Image (cartoon, rainbow, N blue to C red):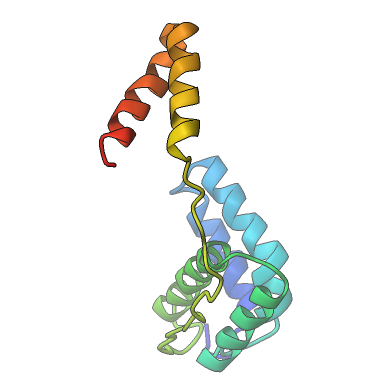
Length: 145
């Protein structure tokens, strides 16, 4: 095969090869990522460049996908590209993707001492083995203050 193969052809051959090595559930997850994200964006390309992938990442972030989901997609894309390079269907290209830092602040709600006491009193007066975890956590957590 030549180095002028479309990614969609490489994907088809990669899937055929990969099917015999992974569980059905993993293969299904790969297929979902390929059909919904990789093929629509890169399927007709002969050579996938870093700037194409970086633009894809920004577009998917704008669409609301999480960084983890996008990284999962990129893992599959890179496996496909390595398969293509190994079988001389495409050229090797280094792809280093940068994700923007998350600027949103995450706050953690902390119970006041009075709320902690209320929970402890309730759990102690309605003790069950199920509540044992809450008691152990509360004792451990209160010891920090």
